[in-house]
Length: 366
Image 1 (tube, rainbow, N blue to C red):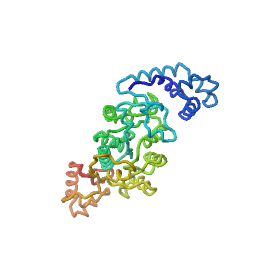
Image 2: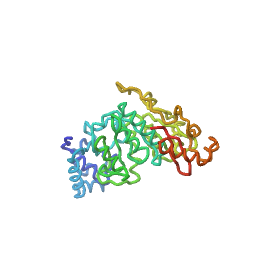
Image 3: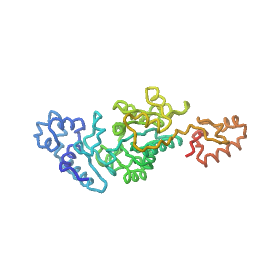
Image 4: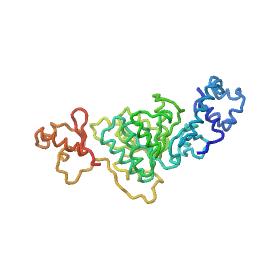
């Protein structure tokens, strides 16, 4: 990417401590591009910027930070995108607080694709991760770039599905784009940098500060035409993303689950509040106003609740809620040894997952 000659000015303003995004947007509105802002006497800026920020604006610390950012931007696959760039995603211009500047690694053209967000619990069940990955791949193959937050659990599964499909994936980070959090997703982040896009509004070197992640969530939903919540507890940060999506005028979707699972309660609360209940990727595509990819052949991907034809195993007695061995013995009329042996076979075959507390849950055959 050819860098904007005025990029150093954008960086100087965004890297100045105490000069927040809202103040910077005000300065841009009042005075024009960053070069024009910086050409003004500091007294002229005092009504719209904190005194401490103006004092730091021309400091050596800011100058060094700008030099390091420019050096980073010259690396392969590295990009810095400003509000004035054609590459800036149009969807973010529609939200109330678009970031003045974005750091990116990877395929910048993905910012111009139709996107769809998939989020959910970090403590996801095996079935939840399968659902997220399956939905993401189907929607990616339908032409929607999958957006999520690189967290473990549902986010990571959504990214894997997006990469496996044709439209790829964007990971929006709550850290600097040069850092990976959590560290267990280093390999996944590397794959996204090569075949998708890593994106952050936070300056290089920014660590995983707690308050950055709710701010990050507005960009996940802001980039997307809709947002699907796969699994979420009532206190999940995914519900923040979903509510932000609704506030931004995006469609909100949720996958229902067991009434006994804490990870279904957030999704059920969203559905009660008006989110669309979905059981397949086709349900999502049919609801996205004005979006229908040309040449898309419907390949229904269900949420794993359908019966498996011809199955004569314990699956016929398990249902779809978590269940313990004793209950299965009663339902199937088998001994504990027989049930345990069959559960082990099904688990090795990927048909059943062992859960905490001695419970087992049926999985979709992947």
